[in-house]
Image 1 (cartoon, rainbow, N blue to C red):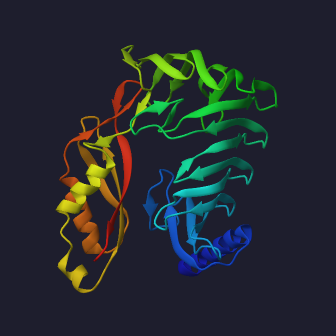
Image 2: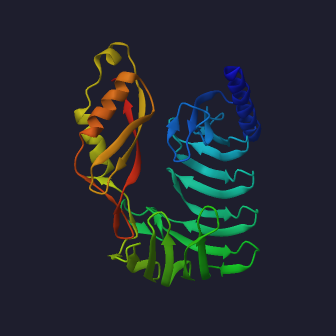
Amino acid sequence: MRLLTFTIVFICYLAVAFAQQNQTSKILAVSFIKKDGSYTSSRDSAEYIRIISEPDSGSTLFNASEIYKNGKQKFLGKSSKINYISSEGQCISYYPSGIKKSVENYKDGKPIGLCYFFYPNGKIYHSKEFQESAPVGESIQGDLNFTYLIKDCRDSTGKVLVQNGNGHFVGYDDSFKTIEEEGTVKAGNRDSTWTGQDKGLKIQFTEQYNAGKLISGTSTDSAGVKHTYDVRMIEPQYKGGISALYKYLGNNIIYPENARKNDIEGTVMLLFVVKKDGSLKDIKVVRSADKELDTEAVRVLSRSRGWKPGMYYGIPVNVKYQLPVTFALK
């Protein structure tokens, strides 16, 4: 009975996805995703389901759809990857209620151009114009690796707070119950004093900006200790960057003999934590390619050294990191 129930619900999910995509492309991959973004083999523990289907005629981009447990659309767009979503073109996200959450444009997996964001009541929240990505490890305007101009902002009743890039911006958490940051906007850029809080880190912060550039920041933790910084968020990084990481993997992975003999290829998706001291922990396979390939990917990654920890508001933090490792026979 449990299997029958699962099958019925699963088919319903697929029917909803295809109806909302208005196409009948062949399904290439189905994944169950937990709230933290990691994969799970259990539908019951998943927050939503992800469906990747073949490209439309004349396109090389895969159709990507994500569905909440309640059957409502979560995400609809295009992806250049099968094993995970690397967004391309216009992508739309939705709240669990079915109300539109955002309309964003992507290029090479990064937002570009004018993007719109909405309150859970359906009213426009704000719009941003994303520009070229910043170098890895830099954070401008609060979004890691991205630069943008704040174009407009309104409160939940529709009252204008920022118009044509000028005014006072108010940034909320995902539940829209807590103000995470607020400050002056001039010509689309952060300017003067911005204040806010990070509930997860239990810190309060004050930052000084000049025409979008962070001049200085000071965070105060729950113990009253102050931390200074001039970059708000720095992601964890392997020594030499992502290219050096893949070079390390390529030089140290030994293709399992049995997998080689049987022409087994695939991508192993790893999820792990880069700790405050730069060491790794909790390395797990969240999407398997083959048992032997999985084991080899974990083995080599666990031996990697020289990671720089992530920094938020001048404080070293543990950060989850997801990494695809592809095995391909030549």
